[in-house]
Length: 322
Image (cartoon, rainbow, N blue to C red; front, side, top):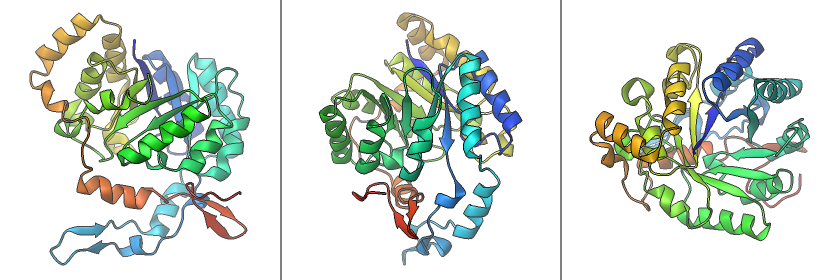
């Protein structure tokens, strides 16, 4: 039976009361693992080429525009304190779910590893760090199991990550992910989960489809196809109240998804065939080239966060001691 990972991300808007309510609503509606993000605005790097962006002569975008000052200002309003992550882990355990966090910069690994998990220590690796092999190594030294999204990552980079973790005898799962926000059903390429099974027995789908348009169709199809994990952003606020709101499921949709994963494979297939008659458009290809949008996102988000050490930025992939 698929496990459901609920990503609360920054849908708490920096408010611990909203965070608490998110956690308990997620558990009440079927979440097995509740995930947060260890994000600090102080870890955002300034790369000048993104302040204005750049287009090719034919008008095709070469570099996305994400001004540094605006991004830092936005994130500062969402920052949690170190002790708030203790609160997060404690509250998830109180709710009866398994806590997990994504670590976005190596300098925050000690904080993440020190939290009172009380059981198996899980950690999430974001798509843009699947190929940050130094970060992956350090996380594997501090956690019991890694769950790794593989979007915006080249095949050879995924293979290298799997090799590193196998050599360290560290359990891990790979989640297929399309790093367009949102992505369409036709972009899902759910067949890629089977390619990921070449490297690990546990695979899944991290779903960023547009809720208002596609609901939980892709997640249902992925479960029917044998996903071991489904990850979805989750909100209790209106979709327009947070940056990730449009790709975040509601409590009602989370409950529907949880009920669906409890059905037999035959029942799941019957529902999918009835509700999504063209569901096969989601199969796509097990190996594929990244889209232009994914490459733009990779360019920006890979290196967006780093560790400031002695006034010098150290990126997650650099083989340098902190």
